[in-house]
Image 1 (cartoon, one colour):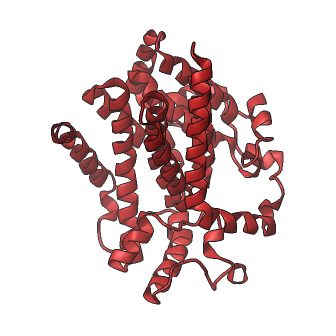
Image 2 (cartoon, rainbow, N blue to C red):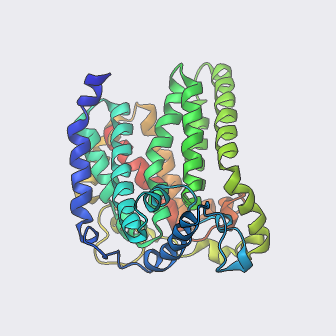
Amino acid sequence: MIKSIKAHIVPVIVLFILSLLFLNSILHKGVILDNIHYINDLTFVSHNAKDSLNNGEFALWTPYFYSGHPLLAVPENYMLDLNFLFIYLFNNIYLAMNLSLIFYFFIAGAGMYLLAFNLVDNKKASFISAILYMFNGFVQSFIMHGHINILAGYALIPFIFLFIHKALTSKEWLLYSILTGIFFALQIFSGSMIFFFYTALLVFFYIAFNLIRKNFAKALVKAFFIGVVMAVVALSLASIKLLPVLEFTKMSSRAVNVSFSEFLGEPIKFSNIARILITNIGNSGLSASIGVIGFVLLIYGLFNYKKRIIWFSSVIIIFSLLFAAGTFIANWMYNVPGFDKQRHVERALVLLDFLVLMKEFA
């Protein structure tokens, strides 16, 4: 066990150093990201959390908006995450915000490294996967311009997929089902409801894909119990936030579905496919670009077409592109509970970015 951990210390340390170098601009005292979501919304919520902690209270309520409605009832507001932990430890909201950003960025890479290594048992390939997961176009064009909860949810996706993969393929399915549920709850606690739904969709598809085998009945029974345990753990742990969210939703503009035009947002155009997959230079809008080298590795990965993960990745990549482009897939997803209250189908590119990186080294 100790030898196994030691074998991964160097790549993990390098990922952390890269995180510090990439975000070195916020390491100075009093400096934060030039991002209105970061400066305005997160600062407000963090001030509320700090005041509550100083009064010996948990930050469940806010006196500043919605007539004192519970703070945790707003889906995008964090409840328990690194930001809350760092405020508690250092009593400084700007330091907490910056440390959270750095650590979530690092955790995203570390999670992808562990997932890729578990799939391919190759440290070099896993390290490249981690780098691409941290520095791809989707991170640059969307995540770094959004709330910190967006990055928090993104950082947890590799762990959730790793645990559901282990639950489906190992004898210790109960342990990994519980871990999957715990990390789903962490996504909810961090306020990353956007990526919670996309991650749940990814997990649902992977469980369904795992049923395509000779011993279908046995796989179905195992998948059923995994799903039950995972759902019970996640919903039980996150109920303290989910129940107020459901109540608040009935009082807010999300009480009814968003209009279909809002749901679509700004769909991608297939005429910009090179920018979406290879490089995001030269145009505005969301991208999932992985660079020239990453794209070459993606094409190389297609030669391993006999592997099941390649087929799964291919299907999800096509699905995510059609979803993000506002095609008939978007029409279907608009009728799925949860997605009918979300905006901007182009965010479905997160599925493409996640699975492209797996596909390269499968």
